[in-house]
Image (cartoon, rainbow, N blue to C red; front, top):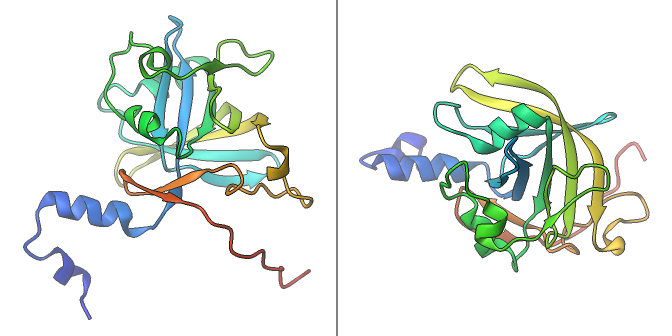
Amino acid sequence: MKTLSNYLKDEDRHFRINFFNTLSGVRSVWMVGTQSKAGVKNLGLFNSLVHIGANPPLLGLIFRPHSVPRHTLENINESGLYTLNSVTSELMHLAHRTAEKFEAHEDEFELLGFTPWYFGSYPNVPAVAESPLKILLRYVEKHLIAANQTQLLVGEVIDVHIKVDAAVQSDGSIDHQILGHLAVSGLNDYYALSHLLSMSRSDD
């Protein structure tokens, strides 16, 4: 049986990064939609979304160190609002391109061919019309991870749009398989989700 040192011995930096990026397994993948003060619409690809709490409904995102331009983070800092948009197999090729480096003046919706969609009273916070699950969030707080200078940004859910009503189960759970929501391991490996079983809680 190999230990960590055995796996990493004589391997280069690229191997090490891939090893640790995929060590934690698959995570849901999302496009984050924002808009700058100049009106430029931006999309960023994230796989670090984490549930913080249900009352109030809070979700967290991890951002890399702000040592280079981070258009998504900068737009959220300015407006305090953003959207999460699920990625499906039909969208994944274009969605993956949102991870490329674009200039601040370039509208990624226009360049990649996504259709902007807006929650009623929020005309300056673009969501992706083609995405079956859209979430509107308001910035709440941010925490610096001192160990590596990444940031945990916490937002409160203020609205959702789900294209397929059947995805919302009778107990309130959302079936992401019905929505075709994908997951990723690391940065580049995409996985389809398959619902196996709903377990009962021990205190039910």
